[in-house]
Amino acid sequence: MSKRLVVTVLGAALLVVRAVAWLLEQRRSPSACPYSQRIFLDLPRPFMRREALCDILKPSPGERLLEVGPGTGYYSGHVARELAPGGSLTVLDLQPAMLDELMRRAAADGIANISPVCGDAQALPFPDATFDAAFLVATLGEVPDKPRALGELRRVVKPGGRLVVGEGQPDPHHVRSDDLRKLAEAAGFRAAERVGGRLGYFARFVNEGDEVIG
Ligand SMILES: C[S@@+](CC[C@H](N)C(=O)[O-])C[C@H]1O[C@@H](n2cnc3c(N)ncnc32)[C@H](O)[C@@H]1O
Image (cartoon, helix red, strand yellow):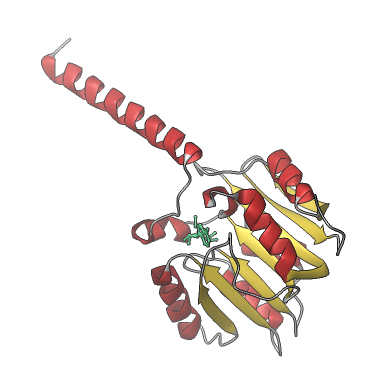
């Protein structure tokens, strides 16, 4: 084997080892997708289309909805349009740069019913029962304390309101639908519907109401 081939093979092997180590680290200690990687958020999503999200979320004119972890707003504008007239979408993200970009894009598209809030899914800055529905896509896996985030979502969604969670591949933080269902039920949501498969799914839950969850 030539020296050049040996160097190439060793280089490729090192890259694979580093990639696997990064994936394992991300699963152990999840962290938010950095703004510098936002280009990946604009890629087409044949298995998690915007129309499929709206079909299962059913946003209606006049409703008040919350999106947690909108990033640059792949889904936000599409949902916000369905809420007009009279409704609004609040988008909450850890990273102000993501929210700034989202609001720039919304303004360019003539969408005026989105309000940005910088905050953490684990401590939502809203009163109880504020929203008719909430949704989050490719975000729950990045949240370190998922039960706490789902508990917060249950608190701010009205009793009987909807929660839609979307998860797709490839994503080092992917939450499997079985795991999501257990987490959501433990937080007081009832599983209602799921569409999609291994490469991408949306699952809808209903806030069971006021009984205390132990
Ligand atoms: C992978 S991006 C997905 C963005 C968007 N939902 C999409 O599908 O294009 C995840 C987003 O969730 C945000 N995020 C991660 N952890 C969060 C947390 N604890 N609270 C609020 N936002 C969070 C990140 O800042 C990032 O914008």
